[in-house]
Length: 286
View (cartoon, rainbow, N blue to C red):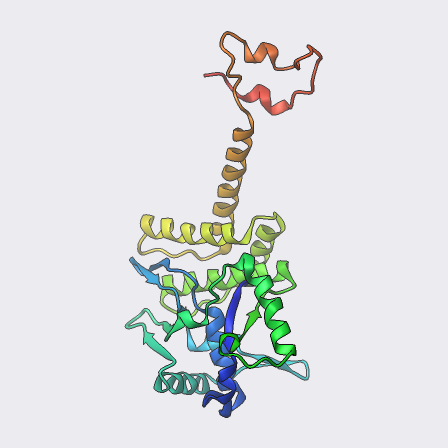
């Protein structure tokens, strides 16, 4: 997960700062997890749009997401405690919560005034913004224009993060598809790791993963994807097609009228023989 959000200093004087620590931890977690742009996802036999500033999740996922390690043991909040915090945030006018009905169970969290937590500059300028903010903090400058710090939530372990991000998205898609909480299996994680090891960019992987579920839903509205291996084949196929297109763009036809491209392929301007890649011979002339 990469990007920046505004973290207002005025929260130090807010009611949530005076609550037990897990209240603010859940609040921060929700700010990190909400969508930064609208996203259309498959839901049952139709589609659902998760808007910017919203996060489709569940009480148990929030509990796991704000978990912590204590003396080597991973601890999670009780789901009832999470629900109580969400109710408090709703009462404070900080979020809205919508719940799925019937067999489709989910928790859709909407941040109120989500735009106020977003940086005005794009990510290319975020590094400079963060550096300037650091200077302001060190000097203890009290200025209304600098009443926030920029929080960078980029993780150092990129490969591990990619596996976790893909696994989480896969779990979300399966949960929405089947209407119940689904967790990736060990074999799912192994297949996800194979995709990451191939060097397929994370944004592309997530995009193709979403498309895989969308196309499957259109073909078989009553069916369900049971293994990430199915998605792995789809993602790898799309990746190979993408590479083939890039390779094809590098092979440019000879535009000179009357020349034979195949005849001149092995010669340069001076008539000297040049190296010709093997794949050139496999392209048929129109």
